Length: 198
Length: 331
Image 1 (cartoon, chains in turn orange, blue):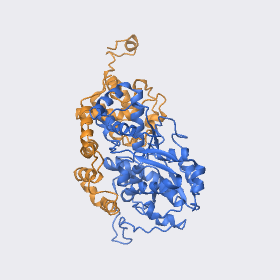
Image 2: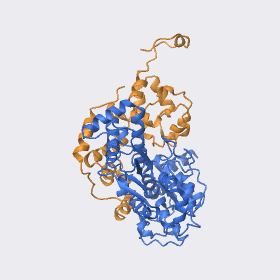
Image 3: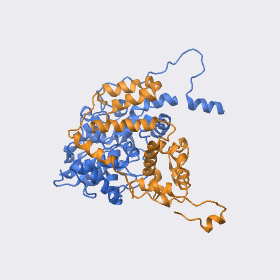
Image 4: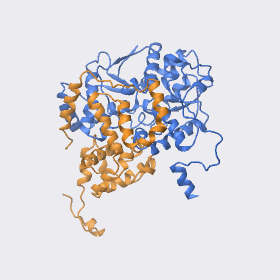
């Protein structure tokens, strides 16, 4: 457990530093996240094309992780707005795997049911559902299920696009199923029992 | 003869089938052979990674494991889609960087009678192979109808040059591979600083307002610099910029018309292939006008685009969308 250090006393802090949340997120992230190395420089937020729509910039989110603010972090829309463009990742002087940390936070938020808007989680889960059923993506099934539920008012505006995609044969009406679906299902079933713990 | 294993990815059979058609058309002239990985599955795109980590990596790794069974004479897997390329490369890289992940993924694979040792395969993107293995000189040799006079915005997208685990690209933010390739085809390549800006990825599905702004930037940037069309290397980029351009125009009240073609389609044209064989005309924002600049006739019918607004109407105040209304209120 972290100690109540002299530095913290001098800084006027009254409680021990609790880095358990930071370590938890770091452990659950694929690769070596380098999350502990963040120096709060803000290169990430400054590079982000979608930062304007985020509740917190990645820099702020990482400070909140360090401060142990679990609920606020998992409720933040930031990981869901992240477009996975890796701009921040190549600019980060500390090589924090920022995009992968965002993926971890999404997974944790889904498990804790702590997101504020279910649009993005529903989209991800529907997509995964298609893949787990067919082994391949199925755009028409995904789009119709998702749009009917979350963007019914967008449908009239999208009609020309959907019509064009279907008539040009760019959106198959039936899904393609892989041959060895039982094998894939067995792999995923086993994988779901496993978690990164160290 | 260059031989590789091919991981096509789901889009190549649906929304990006023009990419697959044009790729098949240029393989023979370039003397490249691609062998499809048998019974490959979806890579999970950017969705599965955000839900459950070990299953997500196991899903990706099944493809790598299957590919190792077909390794006769080559250990290189080629992916034409940037997201697939990144996912396959990422799984291979992280399984090496984090042995704990390697152990768990292989435990899951074993349930399906498979295994994968990280580092066995070399995952590369199609344009990487064409520029660096086949080479620009060999490509130039095959050009029979140079794209002289066609102004092209080279759009590399984000997931291709970043995060670049194996240091393959000339630069993370301003890579030149696509520029060089288009120049070799005789096209006039415009200066396009947005070349690796994001197209919005899945945000067109879950946060359209965020995505529309990203799409607008890219399309407006190409338009302002006088591009006739944009060249892309990724099915997701093509889908967002092409299929959602109409909705983006409606959102901002703009009237951009910027066709987006795959770089393989432009290669095919330069090699003298027929536009139909290259899937040209399958784009929703028609490239008919742009390709007329090089004397290519598109035979595919145009799709029913968004209806034009009536020029004249009752003297009513214009209908503003959310963003415009906010701006108006501030004023």
